[in-house]
Picture (cartoon, rainbow, N blue to C red):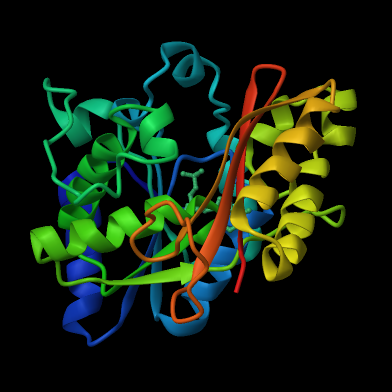
Length: 282
Ligand code: AMP
């Protein structure tokens, strides 16, 4: 499997396919690939002629240096997984220097508050880092379609905003969350869980399912209280936040509005491993 590492090579390869009228799909990742990523590759392969997968652990989106250091990296295993899915995938695995040159910095963006809540509030600068690397990657790859998981729902909304701010000629496609059989959302971080934390981790999704049920007939405050109490009783999982928000604006929901779509979002620490998940409520 050919791995592109520099800009002109991948840009030229994609441009040649576009000249032949082929549709280009793009799936940006940070590697440590799993079935969640694979579901995105399969979505992309269904609707595009050529699919580019990038593997790049983006330093500017980590607000915690320890998190960046311990982020799992295994390019060889990633390439094997990609080869098994489809050997025609184009892989772009650049160095930090190739993406950022000597200035490893984020661009300042105004995302109208989308980046100030939930993940943005707990990880300052995270979304500007995400948006910066995506702007650079979109400029290099020039895809027609880009695929993102609803696992990172807030990120998906930020990407939509970035595309509109920068007026980028790419269509953003959101893909459903892929889960283990016990309900835990697939994540590169799951491999860092101890056995006992892995065993209790499905509690996160189960609590979201119960919150969704309660949302139908209880006031929002009761749903919040239920989740807070549920985690108080759990010795292994520490709740960082639980939020019910408008699915488009991500503004905190205080009153249920049947004309609006609401979603619940959660972040939990299992020891030092931070896990996030979310669910559509209506
Ligand atoms: P990451 O490598 O964590 O940056 O993720 C790359 C892409 O894969 C992002 O669009 C994620 O939202 C998506 N992704 C990660 N885990 C899952 C999952 N369990 N289900 C669906 N998409 C996922």
